[in-house]
Image (tube, rainbow over all chains, first blue to last red):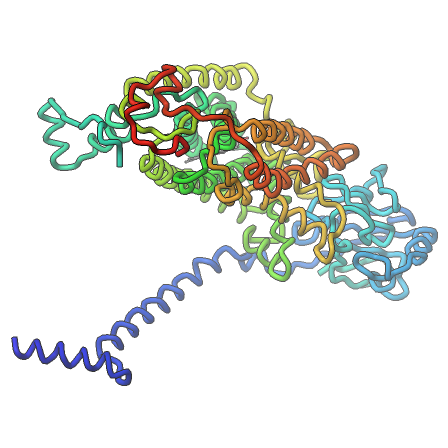
Length: 191
Length: 430
Ligand code: HEM
Ligand code: FES
């Protein structure tokens, strides 16, 4: 009894005098923190498993023969399981794209910035609307191209111009230009 | 809790006595939905829809577990496995139609239940927690139904998944990584299909858990009623069983009639034919729409077509769509009138019916193509929607003179209440 009382007294004074943390406080904080860190560590793989797996990430690249695409025509290719538009612009389309005041655009970019030097007629973009990801119309034969002559997304009405820049509707960005290079005059490698 | 006059559970059957002493589960059921739960005597048919929603959930779980025995969540075979269910599995066509239309019925019932809440202001003190949990249930239902619709892996499934996960890409900075994390890829693929199946299986049981909390919270003040006047005395209530088990049973019969008419005579009426075309990542259907129950919110999403201040149109649309539901969380504090029921609030009542019309208009526009005049109508209707909750409701609450309330439920039902004169002089407004 006496012993207990003195322990109680000791802890009381220990707690009250401000300095000196009680052993029990220390053990308590250390144990709970340790368990907390362990819990967080266990959470990491649980969250990370949902991110794209190695096979999905494995950067594939695609080589495409563009020799058959005449000016004014476009094809749809596939890269990372998503559509890519490869379009051979006509001189008028290039002129239309260059005639726009870049500063007035929602996502200011020139056609030159979006194409390879010396090959400004080859406009290569993802066929994925930057609004919510639908495939815009305009690459296929006979599809509507929208009021700016480029692409039109039927989902929520985004309109892109001949440089595939956003001009109207809810999409925030121009159609994305994927990394690509010309292996030769007739073959382009995407990715 | 319950009212002091609630019947007490006294099992006569020795087996039930034995069970009750060891695990008072029968007592729990008796007090929750049996003769031990006193309920206002004047509930109208609007009060059927809670029980009907519970029934619809059970229906979805039963048909869903059975479908999961035949369904394969793999992008190569998912579409075919659903066709296999339709053509080869015994009664498979019926089970699938029962599940798909069960989801529609579930939403019809829950929307009615929610609008009942709007009209009778069931969200007011002391029932705020019931209301908040209800909104949580609705959000979980939307997530569940969305992921279920992805499973058949048709064109609408695929493009629905793409567009809805695309919503997250509107969030600044983390948006695109977040979308890729949700999908496990750059576009919906096998990884996405598998996790959607896993979650579609899980979430209904989470909903079940939240429903238990919802009903628990309900049983503390007890049900409200069409007058909005709180229960004062025994003559205001009747035991849940047999009075409301019978009334709910009748409602269930009507529900089943409508449901069976859909399942057996118009199973694809509410569906979209494009979902019978296998998913094609390279071609978006000309007119993509979500299931009908998402239309009002989809219309709000599409109503934002140009940037607003520094916020891009895309982010505005997404914020507005989520806010359209999140604003319900604040309802108990936006509507400050002390009177609950719309029957005694002449001005509020008119705006309630306007809101119903507004939501129907939004729903119609959400299902229509993204062109004029629908875009402009959606814009006006979306604006009115937020105006209703954020401006009209608080203003109406402060300027309206409510009609006189009955002294008690008994007086409202019988025209007189003997206790009315004997009762202490407390204000009739609860
Ligand atoms: C809140 C309850 C639920 C809702 C609202 C719901 C909704 C849906 C919807 C809308 C579909 C698409 C139907 C179609 O067009 O084919 C679906 C499919 C499916 N659901 Fe559910 N569901 C629920 C509960 C469950 C549960 C508990 C399971 C399994 C344990 C389940 C398993 C399935 C399966 C396997 C499919 C794919 C087969 C098919 O497409 O018909 N569901 N669900
Ligand atoms: S996805 Fe293209 S406009 Fe919405």
